[in-house]
Image (cartoon, rainbow, N blue to C red; front, side):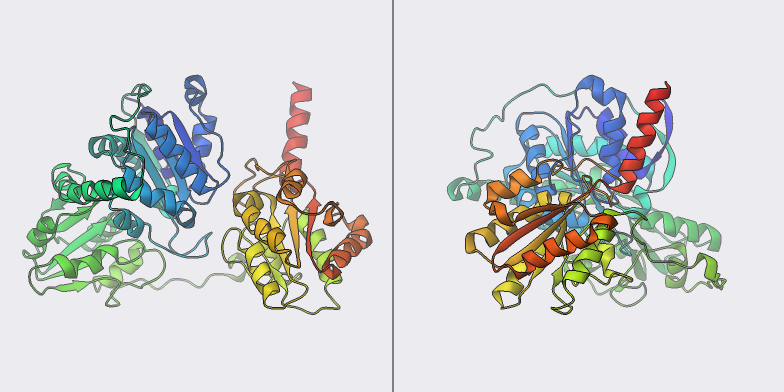
Length: 536
């Protein structure tokens, strides 16, 4: 068996490849992006013909992965936590349909919001869908639990969630590989009605799902993924979930603490296991990244009154990542004073790249808007969201993928004019097209600016489904040709671009402006790649 030094994301990708997947489906989203990129770079994946193309959004990724599972093959779906919101309809119903080939859904949560707009804990979705959830504590477990996830999926004919967090996704460690498994053969479900959720059939599937829950709990007791570790000091017990286990072990070793530990990496957790552990100690500290999911559930399964400490009682903060310092504080240990951060290395807000096409688009938009006043621009999630910062101060919202178009529509319906949406090309095809269709059908007076840099820029320059298709898409949806404008966001075209925007702001109907220029970063890479190939 060989060893590799891998990111947590890469360990998952390698685990999936070695488990014999036939396809990975995903939309780029930090901190999950590197899983798919690793498989895309894999020569083994290319030789085997593993599907690796990006999906247009997380919903289509989840559904395509379910379709591959229907055909008997093993499939991996990857997304960040807010992407699971987009995929939720298919994700929750997949718990009802079950699977044929193994299906593992990797969801990367982002406590402390390093690159996200909220801190949601995806374990809630797993519990809501009543499917198994696996939560590795290190890179080796990320590899092992990915492989185990496919076995578990096929054992119970259910999708399995693998939940990780940013810190695990983006840190490296040595990982020992296991044997490569062959891909599943193509085969149809044994029950021809399994994936048909008409009410009469869905009621039967739901009863089956409910009846499986006790089996899942018993499997978690026997699998060895969750384990109890003895300790001499019974004044406290520690329940540590996923990555939080590492933080506890680091602090326990330094402080020479010897409390019993219940390490949790597989859900649902058997109430018997929790009761057996807790009745041996005086009080319990629950360490878990994200929401107090397990901590809250304890009040429903414990047979007696126990002292439970964690995020709910203030022992740990309700927001942000855990770290060894917070764990030390939770156990009443002294924390070393930290030195003040020098001004030169203090956190600075991100900024648009020099030469970015979004800059010239915003400069033209701001000038065209001067006669109307502020507060009229709804934006979206992408590099262009940085237009909220000085010196542009150009946008007034950033809620979720696609919300710029629909919020602009709602504001227009309320009587605001002009009402403007700014959305990127990849975000537009992800979830902006349906909002545009609403505006076209109702002839809503909105101006939609698609800032098209021909890539998915914020996550590293992945291919955009919108490249060279935007005009045809907008015309197909029904935007009138005379109000479908294309402009080149360069400083030398500033006056022309300002006039284009001003004309469309004055129009009392649906208008779309495509501000089209390649991302400065991908353009530089293209030039370097071309020069390199010419030299060779």
